[in-house]
Image (tube, rainbow over all chains, first blue to last red; front, side, top):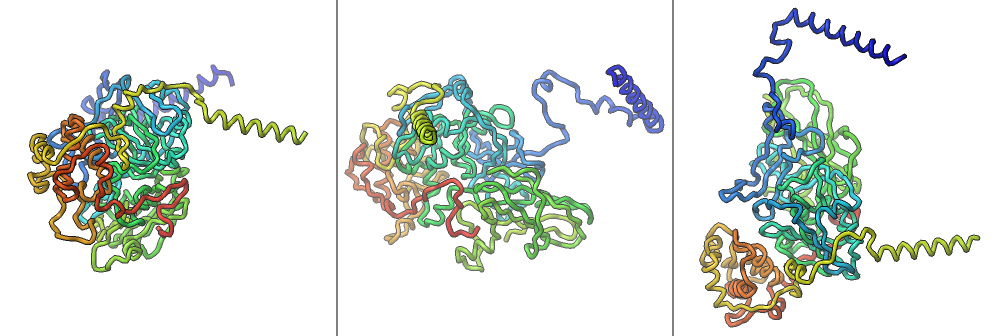
Length: 414
Length: 188
C-alpha cells in the first residue's frame, strides 16, 4: 500500500469516528461534548516545565511515630508513605518515605561544591566531584528501603501507619565496588564507615563484603536527580539492609579494620547475638495494601486483593494470601519479574461474600526465608503467650486485616 | 599447542590481577592531608582518630551549662526532652545493661560518646565544640555515671583506654556474606 493510500484510509477512519462522535453528542446534553471551561487545566509555563498531579488526587505522606515532622524548628523526622493508595511497585519520589537519623535539617547542597572522599585502608585516597562520579559506569536498579522502625502496632489504623516507612524507587548511580576497586582496598579492610554531611553527620559501619557486593552511590532516583529529602546530590544505597545504613548526603567512605560503633551502630547495640544478627538485613515481608485498614468495601462482590512484598535477602519467590485468618493459603499472582531487594506487587482475584473475614499475606524469598506470623515469632523466642508479642530486630511479621460485615477494614494486630 | 594456550590463560589471569591493582578510570584526585584530617571525624574504638587536646570533669561540668546541654538533657542529666545521660537509679547491679539505654554508661567504648558529641552536639550548633571542650564534656558525663574518678584527665591516650562497664558485654554483629539469611537457624 502506498503511503498516500494509507493516509487516505486513516483520514476516512478518523472522519467516521468524528461523525459517530457528533451523532452521539447530538443525543446527549451539551456538557458531555467537551469539558466546560472550569473543568480545564490551563497550561502554564510551570506546568510545561514540571508537571503535577490532578487536584483530585490527594495521596500524601504523614509524620510517623507520633513525632511531628517538620517540627517547630523545621527539622524533618520520620515521614511515612501512603501505601494504601500505591499502585505498581515504584513509590513516586514526592511520596517516598523519609527517615532521618535524629531529626535533621535537609541540607541544601550545591552539587558543584559537593565532594565524595574515599580513604582509609586503600591504596589510593580519592576525592570526586559529582561530575566525575557521573562519568563512571553506572547501574540502574529497583530497590526498596525500609526503616527498622516500620513496625505495626494495634493502635495503628492504616497501612501507612503500620508499613509506611518503606518505599521503592528506581535508583541510578555508581556501584560502590567500582570506586573501591579504583581506590584499591587493602588487606585488613573489613568494614567501611559511610558518613553524611548533615548537621549530625550520620555515619554507619557496613561490612566490606556488602560494600563490594551491591551497594550503589546514587545520584539518580526515578529518572531524575535524587531528591534533597533522599540525600541530594548523593546517597548510599545498601540494598536490603535497614534504612539507617543508606547514608544520605554522602560525603565520605572510609575503609577501616574494625566495627566503629558509631552512634548509628550504637542504635543496634544488644546483648543477644541472635538479635544482633537480625540487625542488618530486612526479612521477607509483605502487606496487603488493598483492602487495608480504614478502607471500606462498599458491597459484597468482586475485588482484586493487592499488596507489596519484599525481602532484604533477595528476590521475592512466592506470596500467599489467606482470606480466613491464616487457616488456608492460596498463591497470589506476582506481577512482572521480581527484582532483588525490591518491592514486588502481588494480587489475587477475590469475591467477598459479605461475611466478616481476615486477610493476611505471607512472603517467601529466594533464600527460602518465610515471613512469620506473630504467634510464630513469639514461639521462636519463647515469649509468654499472655503478653503482647515482641518481634526482635526489624519486624517482618504477617499483617492481618479484619473486614467486618459492614465492609470496614481494621488492623487485626493483637 | 595446549600448553601455549594454558600459558596464554595464565598471562591473561596475571594481567587481570595487575589491572585490579591500578586505577581503571583515572578519575578523581588525591585529597590533601589537611582535607583528610578535617573530615576524618569517625572515632574508632582504639581512638586513633582522636585529636590532640584534653579535658577535665570540672571543666565539663561548667561546659554542660555554658553550652546549654542542660536545656535538653536536664541539669542532672535527666528529666528533660532529650535522651537521659545519667544511669538509672537502680543501685548496685550485676549487669550494667540494667542501667538503661544511656550512652555514657551503656556504650562499650568511650570513643562513641566523644564521637557523637563532637559530630552531633549541641543541637543547632553542631561542630562548634573544640576538642578540649569535647574531652571535658565526656569526662563530666563519665564521672556522672561513676565510670571515671573526678580527677581524671581525658585526652587521646587516656580516653580509648577507659574500661566502660559493657566493654565486653555486648553481642558482636556477625560477618556478612552475599546470599546470607538473616540469622542461621532462624526459620523465618
